[in-house]
Length: 409
Ligand SMILES: *[C@@H]1O[C@H](CO)[C@@H](O)[C@H](O)[C@H]1NC(C)=O
Ligand SMILES: *[C@@H]1O[C@H](CO)[C@@H](O)[C@H](O)[C@H]1NC(C)=O
Ligand SMILES: *[C@@H]1O[C@H](CO)[C@@H](O)[C@H](O)[C@H]1NC(C)=O
Ligand SMILES: *[C@@H]1O[C@H](CO)[C@@H](O)[C@H](O)[C@H]1NC(C)=O
Ligand SMILES: *[C@@H]1O[C@H](CO)[C@@H](O)[C@H](O)[C@H]1NC(C)=O
Image 1 (cartoon, protein in one colour):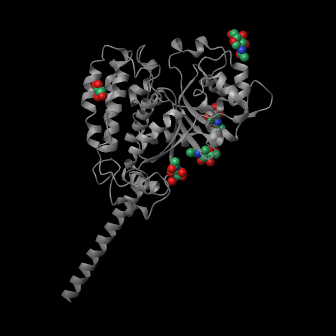
Image 2 (cartoon, protein in one colour; image 1 turned 90 degrees about the vertical axis):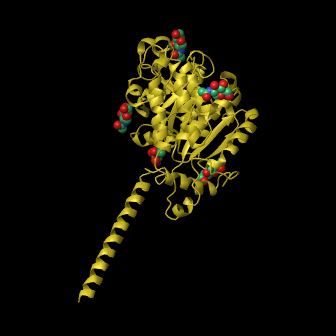
Image 3 (spheres, protein in one colour; image 1 turned 30 degrees about the vertical axis):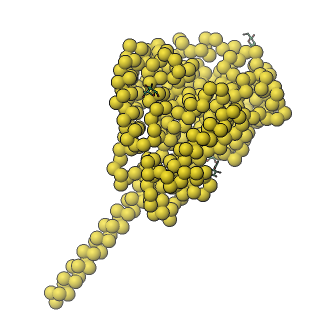
């Protein structure tokens, strides 16, 4: 009888244990399903690349943050297709190093696999290939290189009217026909948060919104459009197109109101008449055309706050991007060449730190101390005054991405 009782107790204990185990497994898989842990997306990225990527350096990487040998097998069994984040950039002239630094910042902080669409002048293609292939050990991205192209009917006219590279981004919805959504950024962008964060704004679009941008200015007294523009522009101060999130499926479907005809026009049909009408009045090229389009179709634009497109304008006349002060700077935009001259040493220091660092976890950590010292030297400048916000943001992003216990990564 007593032995019988013992067996029963033992069985109960075993049952309880396996129940506990089952729950813990459930918790783990729920967490992964929510994309909370860095581990799953990275592991998923490995098999994602194996099925179509450029595997040049596969398996080489015990060095990369994404390398977790043996984990992909375990996860591939229950893997769902991972949503790809599409990032596009247009690089011409001397912008090779700047573009690569932008792509590197995207890779350092992002969680989901990235697909880069790089539009570049032909003479830059070999250099892009060389460097990007040397990064393939990361296994978290793949890329396509394209020449600068225009719709064939009007190619000559577009090339003549604009610097060839400047208007390329307007045509992305027509060139990348298979891509649903895209984040376009200028070459002088640096990500200080995962690209996943801005990508998730796509899901916040209401039914009429097709694209998202930040205001050109926070402070109308120093705004450009409201003081100088000789054409319509969006909102109070216009929008800046350096960081532009697009649902291109919707852009291709929409019929746009305009001031040229009484009928609404598709994206592919509106650009040329718009350019013809306004070519003598526009200053900032394609950004002006975007402002005109969204002036007439304001319900189609999602405006995100300045911290997603943080420029020297937000700090040189005093700090006027309140969201950045409260929540951090998510995307830095060093326009007017500030990464390369001495006008905004704070922007330059961040650019150089990211340009110099390599992908090893240790290197990414050790970027902070010297950068902080460097930034302290800029405290006499307006943008340097807020250097602590830069450091706080980078520290947080690095912690979020690299300082989880290895188990969670
Ligand atoms: C990148 O990966 C995706 C998914 O496997 C694939 O559809 C795409 O063709 C790849 N692109 C390149 C340039 O390899
Ligand atoms: C261009 O600017 C001039 C001068 O401000 C203005 O008279 C004209 O109406 C503008 N053209 C268009 C198409 O808005
Ligand atoms: C873009 O819009 C289309 C059509 O409304 C929708 O099916 C798709 O899910 C949207 N894409 C994203 C990433 O939200
Ligand atoms: C979507 O949001 C924009 C901007 O707030 C607004 O103008 C538009 O009316 C909204 N569309 C719908 C269908 O609510
Ligand atoms: C980056 O490297 C250059 C030389 O390669 C050096 O002059 C510069 O001080 C470094 N900057 C930072 C912030 O590490």
